[in-house]
Length: 346
Image (tube, rainbow, N blue to C red; front, side):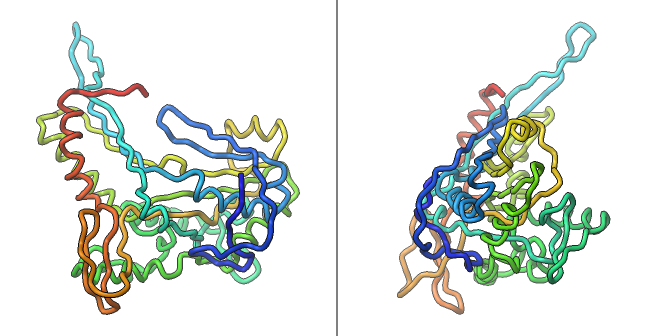
């Protein structure tokens, strides 16, 4: 993949700086899809497995070449009686994609896990970093951490803030619109939490001599309260008179980028991959589905796609739609698909 833009080796996160001179390189990549559209991008390219600089640039290229897309899936299933036997019947099933608009694509930021946050840092288990060494996280702490991450992800918390103190996040669920906007803006101040930068992690991966290693890079979306959105969708389906089993799911297409060693054996293992001897999963890029951004100068006029408020630091406008605004916009189309029992092939 071409690498014409990228940060310098001391970059820590946020918007990249211009790079030093570096010849462009197109890495060999493949995209593997499933019937559910959970596309995975992976590369067994020899150069990105041996050159930290090449791997570093390859990861940065994903921001412009393989954007993540939120996918919402709705399914209604009932049971019908046929000659003393019961048979499942799908009444409707379809998904809706929520692509990122241009003004939010440029708001994507590179983030990393904090040193004290459990993550794969080159071993077979999740670890925390303490100084120059790592410690394996105990199972109880990992279970509690995983539960907390899942809860905060559903609330739309940025992925680099999953390890934040809960008291610092409470204002996201209550308070005035100004307080919420100011706190959200503050959360975006420092998305790169690791003491190592992305180039250092890439160098570490490439320096490891083993055929059983993996560098995993996440591409995520955030900013919506998915628990609230699921409630809205379920309420709509019930309001339309549907009394069967309701399934509401969501995931991100193009969310996973894997780099694994070259060679036939490694490529075969990739089809049924389980974590090998050395796994790195410490960083990613995240895009907001909605965001409050500062506005320079005098108060701007609100538009159809933005709202404007005045904070202690000046004017801010909200770009993108909230989960409730998106639902209201799509409610007529969702209603039509459900009542007409639309079903797409899986």
